[in-house]
Amino acid sequence: MALNNNDNRATFVNISNGQLYTKEKDKERQYFTDIDGTITKVEFKDEEYQGQNFEVAKITLVDKDDRYILQMRTDSGYFRGFCNSLKSSPNPTEKINIAPSSKEKDGKPQTTCFVKQYGRALKHAHTLNNMGDLPQVTKVTFKGKDQWDGTEQIAYWKKWLSSINWDHEIVAGATTIQEKAAAQNTVDSFVDAADDLPF
Image (tube, rainbow, N blue to C red; front, side):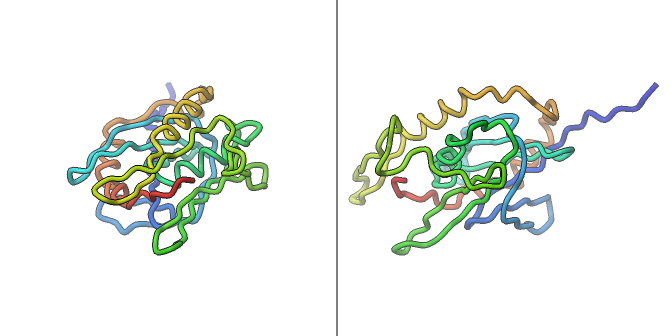
């Protein structure tokens, strides 16, 4: 008889101010510049924090024996940058490196994620001068303020990510209790303001 351990715990990774971080219960945040791994699953979940509702992309990455769940709001520049870069990959199911970035412009944060593969940075598949089939964002006025509505772009990226066959799960399964506990400890990251810039 052999002993086996199928406790496939995942480390939850969040983004704040252009940095990745993890946080275990009763411990300080640990910050990182980037993460390596092979995507094995992408899920979308509705979350709520202090009366604010938002949608989160949960991207499972596996690197050798390590399993991570990278979480980012779908209405953020991090999500748009991640998707736009990954789409130019010849094979998005192979190992990648993801590095978030946040810089200020006109007093507002400009956020994105840079993606590298095979040691090279992936360029955006869609640009302002070459939008292709990516829907335009629209400017709307809400409570007297102009804001960018990227609802159609979010739907486009979700559909694209869902069309990829991520079934090469390297570490199978998930420990629901641990995922829920980790989510409670890291939900504070989602209150970071999503940027309102169009691209």
